[in-house]
Image (cartoon, rainbow, N blue to C red; front, side, top):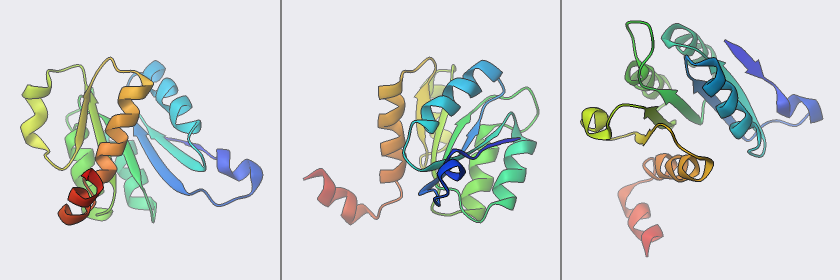
Length: 145
């Protein structure tokens, strides 16, 4: 587990707390750089379920989780998402995998899913979708008008 304290450099409290979970170090670094470009984000990283679970259990607030579905260990990204939602009910979750969306989509209607490989624009859209899923249905309908 690694913590990026970019917001601490300027001594301001971050607006967003983000957990990035990915077992491929190159992808983890890319995602961390992407999130670091977001304004006022404190980033926590983990390479699997155990590291992610530690962050989820220790932190009082997590706003967004970007998480791979498949890890080299027994537990997976869906397990991470379920633990996160249990302890942080208002967390937005984006899951990603190289697997076909139809293979995993039915498992998590509450989460946004993006298939690897993906670009910044596609990831941004899925982050927006993940936050929209947290809004009550009537607010979602109003926003769509």
